[in-house]
Length: 147
Image (cartoon, rainbow, N blue to C red; front, side):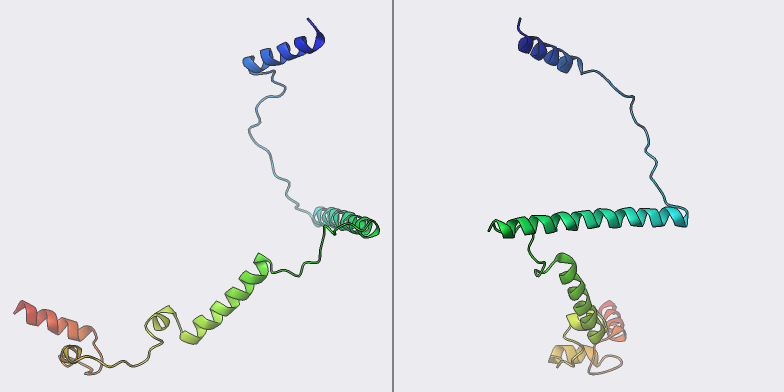
């Protein structure tokens, strides 16, 4: 048997068995929580270093592409992002909500007075305001139906 066949055979044998276990099962992994001020500053510094490395790599890539007349990979971020659009949309919806003082007024035409039909006027005249159908009118209707 050649070495390749032997290696393939042993690989398949381990695969069928379930392979060799190298470590025990891991139950928990404790998260790193920065408690002291020094740990927080160190964490911020390492994040800043990684961010600088990433932007430096982007810069090197862009310079290389410009020198070699290649298409630029990392273009300026002038497009709308999800965070930009949602922030603007939320501000606009808050303004609209404040203008109408709630969804109910918006849903029913912004609180404009509407003309009642003759049947609605009869119901409205049962109790209270004759230009508006309200709770006491419905109570009177229920009493009339029971009688």
